[in-house]
Length: 267
Image (tube, rainbow, N blue to C red; front, top):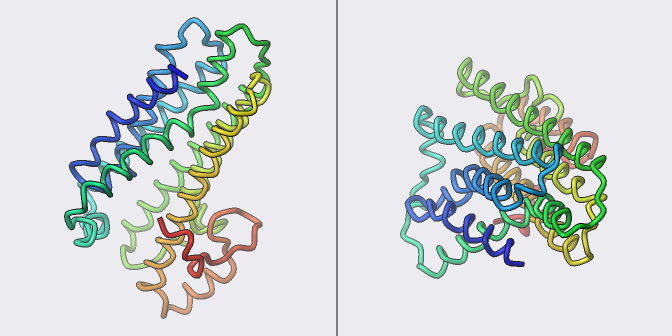
């Protein structure tokens, strides 16, 4: 438990960037928070690192650096994005209790997300019998998720550069409407899979499961926000209407085409 408290302190410190801009709790604090947690795990459990766990940590660093840097560059370069990101309603001074609650929630969630890797390292150091197979499978899945998210972001940026006023329905966006969020889900599915064969106790699996369900909820919540925004902008466009009727919002082949009515996804 001491290791988890240390990771929480690291996550809390990096997530504190949200005190500058509230949205940073979920953007820069998220990306760079995962980087910090991966580095902290490598330092704390250096003697227990195996090849696949080292790869997992490095992939989490790559993921966090790419995401954090991408969000930072998009914020600085895209005027339209800044108008959305820094909506006046988001910039209103929030009660300190609300800010603290969100800060703690984000810091805890990020630790829970990486917990399968941390538990694998903890159990290895404690002398538990572990298998590397699922760690490699998890690492491969994480890599696929990183590539999926990166390509989705690049394709959207390129499409918006060609035609800023049109919704994106090319490339990966032909498969699902939020392929970048699908990449996120894939990444954390890989992290969860890496816990198999690592001797996790029931409570460790519970912690890992809460983290996984939490980030999947966040991704669907983000998809809902995007849907509401796109419906407002493109809702009267017949091409957009046809696109959303045939393209799942987040998970391929899963016939969920809209989450607008699910108010419980509001985060």
